[in-house]
Image (cartoon, rainbow, N blue to C red; front, side, top):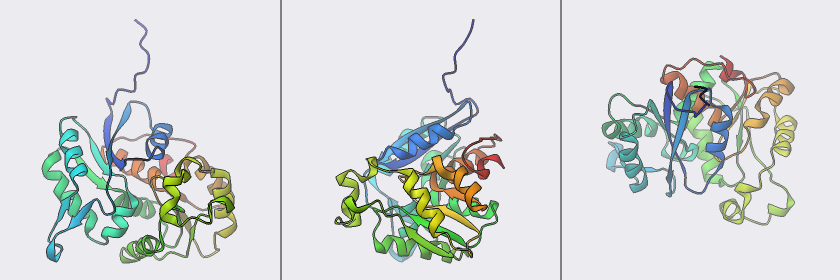
Length: 263
């Protein structure tokens, strides 16, 4: 009997918490997934961070959506689970990733590896030997979150050479960052103009590029940017997929989406 590929996750099944109104994370993961690895999304409708600090920062309390999703994931025999939300790591700050991993692990069980996009990007930067990245932020995050993102990496020993918040064009400039997504910016993303802005703005001092934001469409340009800039180019979704595969013990060479996934 000739069987067709059904993408059954016999090598690994990965659970991913994503923003409820976004389509980019799943689309980019599906584009990059190696054979016989599946991704399963749970959607979160909450502001960052998705788990709030308790008094004196002794732990975190999960948002209701995150708690419900973790209970559902616990029944799915997953290999790994990732909180696919850069802003939660940024706003939560140093120590938040570890606190939320500890909390989720109680529900998911010891057999499921838990990580966050913050931890994933830090691991990817380390594996790529990038210490002074050019940080790229999506247009819909505000000044406070940009500052939190820069501080997050600085607090973890990374010194950004520069940063850029992508300019989506004149038709969007009259809207504040917080209004862009609800007016359709998330579904009107153009990767060619993003690549042009990164290439034009990347400083000589940068030893790599990190494109933050799991809802920020960009994996289609990673390989081209690496060829153009002659430096590692990392993205939020690429880093999380790479880290989850390795945490799950899956060794797979994925071509076309940056050198990180070919390591």
